[in-house]
Amino acid sequence: MTVERALARIDVGAIERNCAQLRSLLTGNAELCAVVKADGYGHGAVWAARAALAGGASWLGVATAAEAEDLRRHGLPGPILVMGALTPEEMRTALEADADVVAWKQEFVRLLAERAPPGTRAPRVHVKLDTGMGRLGTSDPAEARAVAAAAASDERLVLAGLMTHFATADEPEDEHFPYQLERFSRFAAEMRESYPGLRVHAANSAAAYRDSAAHFDMVRCGIAIYGLDPFHEDPAPRGLEPALSLCSYVASVKRFEAGESAGYGRTWRAAEPTLVGALPIGYGDGWRRGLSNASDVLVQGRRHPLVGTISMDNVTVDLGADSEVEPGEPAVLIGRQDDERILCEEIARRLATINYEITCGLSPRVRRVYDR
Ligand SMILES: Cc1ncc(COP(=O)(O)O)c(C=O)c1O
Image 1 (tube, rainbow, N blue to C red):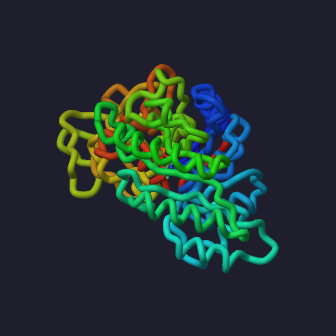
Image 2 (tube, rainbow, N blue to C red):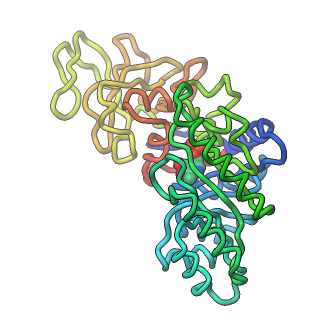
Image 3 (cartoon, rainbow, N blue to C red):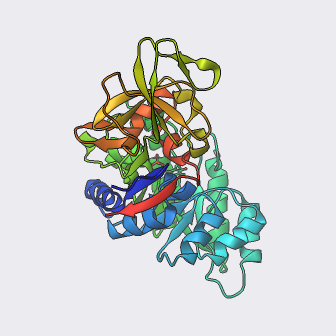
């Protein structure tokens, strides 16, 4: 088996199956928008998008105009929704990429009509009501109504959708999610009376699992399509398959006597004689320094503690006194070896963060390879 210093293996078949699984949950005619922003949460946007479409997603969601442009450059077909805020320049890029855009101000709608690049289709607008995320969108239903009316009454534009975004869908017992859902449902019902063709969408992955009343005409799922758990638990019981594994290898093995230390600052010393392996992966690859002395690595199908401070390009692992590991042995930082596995959710917990940040944080220096 060939090894490599820092390699992310992406199982595109898993993304495809996760999308098919999500689609099977959806009620009515709700469609699946696969969210592939931030380079597909670190998995590679173009590969993830292709796999998602093969798995039954019919829309792609991104945060920025440049992300939409990149998908088109790679030949991705079908509707793309740019969900983020856009400067006038970015708006132009989004429209040139034939993407739908989000609006919550009349001024923005006016600019869309005036600045649509010649030769492109009429800009398609999704009005965003902020029902309690406190971020983008208008919190004022009257303003949302006015923005929708401005788009609908301008023959240069198409009023395409109505959306909101949930703040706490991943916190099952909270009361804010039902509050947001109720607020949005009422507003959507009212708007549908005036605009029957409106595409209504609200749910992220957690909301899609949590309440089918949030499915409306489309769900926008990111984390779950990558097989990561929206509720920060084990994704397996939900039928999700993690698509990404992070691999390295043991580049050197050294015997340590009791008291000898590994790494900067000497934060770990051998309590007794042992063998310490060095893996050529570090925080320059996104394996965060906060994991120093606080995570495990799989070698020969067994967990071994990561010891000493993580450097930019190397980490050290206590292989144990009777280890027979030789240089060149494969190592897994996220993923499975034999019956052992390290979930992204475990790494996130150790860093007091969420699985999203772990895969998004893998740097460009980590080569991505795609398997089926
Ligand atoms: C507006 C919007 N919709 C949908 C999503 C997808 O969320 P998730 O990855 O939790 O499914 C995101 C991601 O943060 C988002 O910003």
